[in-house]
Image 1: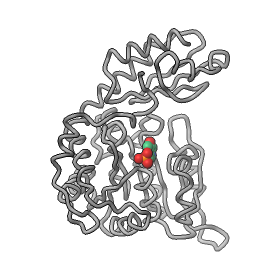
Image 2: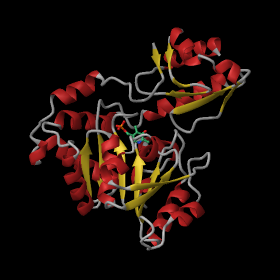
Image 3: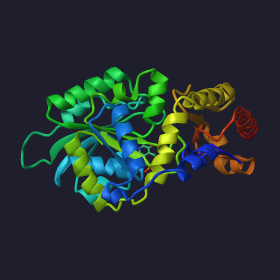
Length: 332
Ligand SMILES: *Cc1c(COP(=O)(O)O)cnc(C)c1O
């Protein structure tokens, strides 16, 4: 079975498992785990932020960030289709009493600067206090332009808002643009990255930002049940991923390109060139009926319907991509 559902489906490699098995560990709730501490220092340096905190998941990392930036009754500005608004169970509202103000995103993932500015509420008891702008990069596999990120974060700062970047796939954005992850994250107060997506670790994310912010996030992580004990086994996987799985993302991007190229020109199928490792394939309605089930029966897993989502990752070689193309062409 060729699994294109997500870049989270990868299994840890033998080398990663060896690094995990060999990890020096301690009780991280006491701050005693040397591998976790090493990872946190490394991530803070890599993202050029004062401090970083290991997190069990990207969802918890984003939630800790939102709750560390905002108080009860504050609001955050966020894309209508952003992960922190749409795909995290409403956690900011449910657990943080933080009101989301979702805003429309263009096809490129950007929220128009005028929309952001217009959504910032005046200081008036009728309104929630607008406190934070949260953006996401990559969004749906698309890279938000650097000048947009700089302009949006500058706008937020001018209005006294904090800024958070959901960078679950920030390393893909860095590769696609040739910019460092630190440069992309520069305008943001805080940034979250995932090790369990394209980097191939079995679990784990990290949140980076100012020291006092990370101290608040640490308390919130504990409250949310994210204080792990011998977490060094997971941090070792993340360190291994940073050493060995960053440059190779280029292969995933090339595979996505090959998939898109190989489907271009099929009747009733439209596919735009991917920027990173996610390919969206739009089907005319006649072709879309039951397509995910038909693809699965033919040996290919993916998500979607009329718009299929194909995600390339570490566990796929060039032969898998060619086989996926054969299945897709025959089925579509
Ligand atoms: C996957 C993802 C997350 C959350 O990560 P989990 O580890 O699955 O909780 C957050 N934001 C984006 C953009 C993601 O793709």
